[in-house]
Image (cartoon, rainbow, N blue to C red; front, side, top):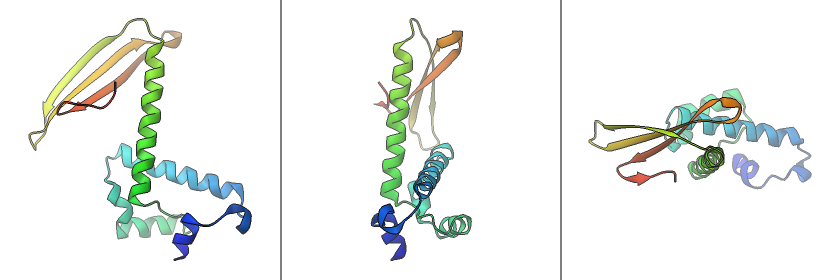
Length: 139
């Protein structure tokens, strides 16, 4: 009950919580999102008893986001990365594309397209566009 209150109803002004508490929560949420993305963990990991116990030992005051909230955070991070990649690509004059195709053990077809270009300060950069079974992820 207390976790629910802290996660959804607690107000910084009423409780006198410091602004650093909010930034600490944001830092931990961002770290959790990065872990989910980098390690390709399922959103359900936040419901695992062992994971909850581990996080509680690390920071007993941290309220782990729900699966739905975590999914929304990952989608927001994806949209931000996509917009950043689009902005990067709008400034280039020429690109080189490479592709790779493979089939998973479950017989799912994958296609990866990587766009390479020389960006600011003559730095070689790459943007990955990934498609699974014909679904375009980024345009």
